[in-house]
Length: 331
Image 1 (cartoon, rainbow, N blue to C red):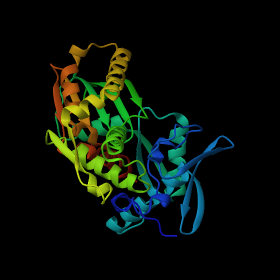
Image 2 (image 1 turned 135 degrees about the horizontal axis):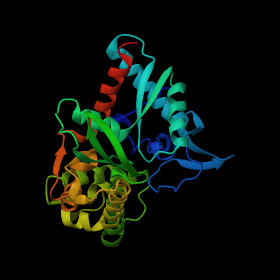
Image 3 (image 1 turned 120 degrees about the vertical axis):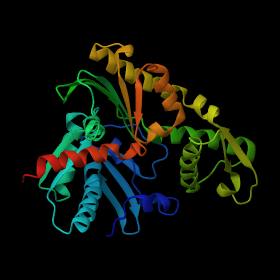
Image 4 (image 1 turned 180 degrees about the horizontal axis):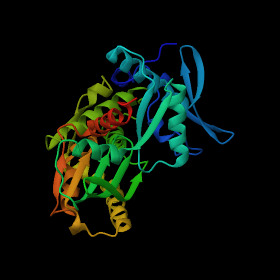
């Protein structure tokens, strides 16, 4: 069976939803979970294990999140070997700071299943800090807060630079909070108005078309104040638009913003430092493109220097690559 990975899967989600898996990172290493209504697959628990059940053209498939991750990691291994022109057996994988030991072990197991022989796990905040510091002089005794809002998880880490070394002081995270949750807010908003204003309530697989549209609208609202959903894209028999402003979106996200604040304040409390003592805030992850997130961080840390790369969603991967180069080069 040939498995596809990456953007091509997202683009085909509407037509192949029943045989598509996403969000496996939110399931790996867990024994219980809250079901996300946007998941096209079924989740079942058997013998203290979570299984993902798919209906595919080849019949029903039941796999753990670890096995799903192994498929993705094998795909990455093949692509990396094609690029390098040689076999590779060592890998550095990053994991959220909020991952439990069970989740870390399940991630390591997935890499072994994928054919990697040597597997190093690196916390995502540490990887991100490597990427930032590799070509930037950071003054000794600087106090930094790294904020990493990815697609599925949030990491916050407070650390200090001492003798050019990174000293982790505290870390906190939320493994159930990421960009996907902002997508779901938009989904709920449009589903409600499609029903109320256009009498559209049963979407079937069109809900995945709506999910993709919500992701586009989220991105568009990062650069403009108003965007809209074309109702005809969801139901060709209906004509109209549903508008949403950037402020509407921020109002919808109020509860998520409170959770983000609480995660930041918890990391700071555990560090023993005050808000005003933070010298720099490093913004990492695609979520940092969203204006309401930037605004929130500026409001919490008005005196700190805020640093954000042009491509914040690549920072963790770049840091992992630097780390892998340094620890594996002598081998």
